Amino acid sequence: MSNQKPLNVGLVGYGFMGRTHSNAYGKVNQFFDLDRRPVLKAVCGRNESNVKAFAERWGYQSTETDWHKLLSRSDIDLVDIATPNDSHAEIAIAAAKAGKMVMCEKPLGRNPAEATRMVAAVENARTPNMVWYNYRRVPAVTLAKQIIDEGRLGKIFHYRAKFLQDWTISKDLPQGGAGLWRLDASVSGSGVTGDLLAHCIDTAIWLNGPIQSVTGATETFIKERHHNLSGKIERVTIDDASAFLARFDNGALATFEATRYARGHKALYTLEINGENASIFWDLHDLHRLRYFDHRDEGRLRGWRSLLITDGDHPYMKHWWVPGLQIGYEHTFIHQVADFLEGLRTGQAAAPTFRDALATDLVTDAVLRSAKSGRWETVGRG
Ligand SMILES: NC(=O)c1ccc[n+]([C@@H]2O[C@H](COP(=O)([O-])OP(=O)(O)OC[C@H]3O[C@@H](n4cnc5c(N)ncnc54)[C@H](O)[C@@H]3O)[C@@H](O)[C@H]2O)c1
Image (cartoon, rainbow, N blue to C red; front, top):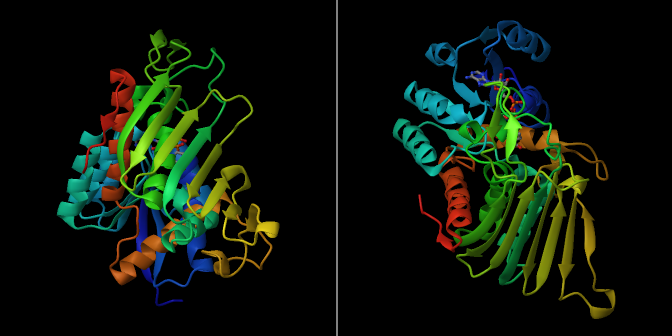
């Protein structure tokens, strides 16, 4: 193990995602045989005492309070961006120019213009890059990809995805600032379209190919909220709910829906795909199961199977415990780091790259355009 080459990580942002990423870097070499070993070299955040406390808890060797300083350090190989969406483009473009590898949280940019500049920056610098669309690496979702690629579903007719939460229903919830930047579109880019639906769209493109056109509607249920930064009541600029129809290149028709106003649902990401021979269904609240129905089964025994994805021949599972024992959300990030490091070894970039993630920004942009125009909108091609 000692001959593993170190990969010095500089993390920007130490909130929710800063924790999932740090956990992944710390665990990956214990479960995967890799020739690189992430080293928690530095974490960057604007508040010195908070960033120092985070560094101590997670084992980072040093801290910075300005990301420009982090990027100028010669001992950083990989810059990992886990900040709110308004800083992704600036940090990623500067990191690529500084010759760093870049991993960036989703959505890539707040809009396709930002995302396009980010793609150009990493491609011009020829530097390894990846976006943290982690749901691709839930073993059950990866198995769905394998099943589809093997042609078991036959021609795909329908794709159906939802991502439902309920944490913004209170009219007293403020917008803006720490923890609530998602409610301010100047920071987030959009509401649930760019936040929750971006996950659904990334998975959908991966499983079922490019999306051609969309028609959607959005709603902002609470029009004004107290803004934590200005101290004033301000207009709410995000979409609270978003629903759209889509046509895929392969002819499939799709429905997508996301909201933060679905009382009782916390992070209910579900997807269902119906093909001529078989269907699959997956649910994040039961993430270690994949439901599968195959019409070619003997009639008397035909029905929905509920596959428990814990066996060694299921994706990623041979790295974990023994058959029957489950893994969870945090493992998807560990899988992502493992695949990124393996991509460095083989020279085959692990997906989703920045270019792959631009495709999602182009779909969310078309959805928001359609919500304004009331018409079907063509999805731009990157
Ligand atoms: N992959 C996923 O499933 C997933 C889940 C949640 C969030 N995200 C994405 O991750 C990103 C971060 O979200 P989060 O939930 O971790 O947010 P968060 O608010 O919990 O954390 C953001 C962190 O960034 C820091 N920060 C803000 N501006 C900064 C700057 N200029 N320099 C340095 N640090 C700065 C904040 O202090 C905080 O530590 C967002 O882009 C979000 O869309 C992805």
